[in-house]
Image (cartoon, rainbow, N blue to C red; front, side, top):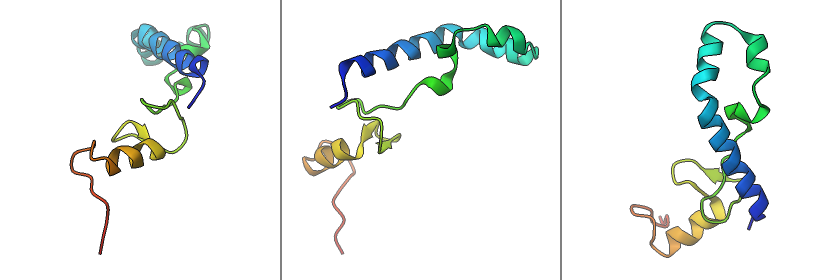
Length: 89
């Protein structure tokens, strides 16, 4: 389980990205890179990290399901993810 501070910091980054998204797009379209550099660092979408919605883990994240591999395995084996079955051949 990730520390709560890391998860909250990432949520804060997502809010800042959403707030500045329109302004960033406008500055990029007009090629005003000096003004773009004056925006907060956390306004850049690349600073947001994909995190598991259950555990907060950042590594081994499945975008399609929004969870980490460990959480995915637990949910799949308990039948909580529709359409996912254990492979057997």
